[in-house]
Image 1: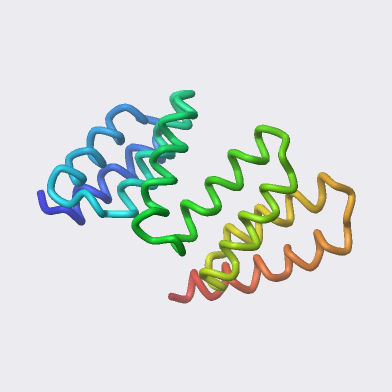
Image 2 (image 1 turned 90 degrees about the vertical axis):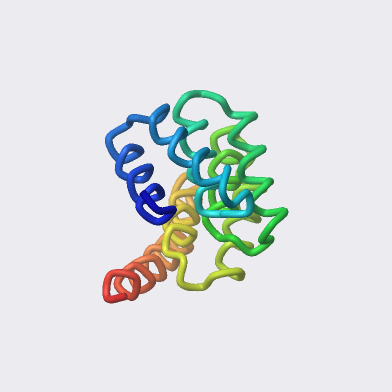
Length: 141
């Protein structure tokens, strides 16, 4: 199985909540290529799902040390901040992700969620519209 196939297998396992098995796939990739940001990021996602928050943060920070503009890891750091109750840090991460990759639709969605929770409905609507536009672009490829 090549690296791309292993990555896809890990992603499918994550989708089925087989987090430990998914993590093993991503670790195999990292044995061959330790700077593979998508695998590092997904390993962090698996860690979060297994309640290993510190390991997840270390993964996201590792990916960002390799590529400071890797939007999925920036968004995941925002999500961790939001879950910890630090909405201001979450907003900064989501803004950073949008600046780094204007097409990364999850940054807009997560920002919309924060705005809704803060009661800022006009901002919520603005980010939901931006999310929809970016998501449609993503779907069309």
